[in-house]
Image (cartoon, rainbow, N blue to C red; front, top):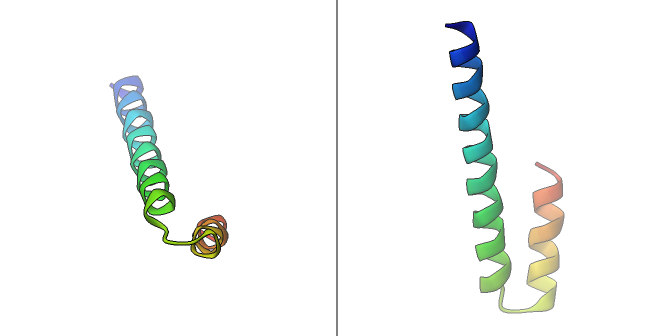
Length: 47
């Protein structure tokens, strides 16, 4: 049972990370200027 929980937790963490990466990619794509994209990148590294 422990290995099942571990596997589920890993999959959940991977999904969360992928969701965050996709949100960041959407933010980059929607950035109106290069400066805005740079600010988004800086803020994302501070998380």
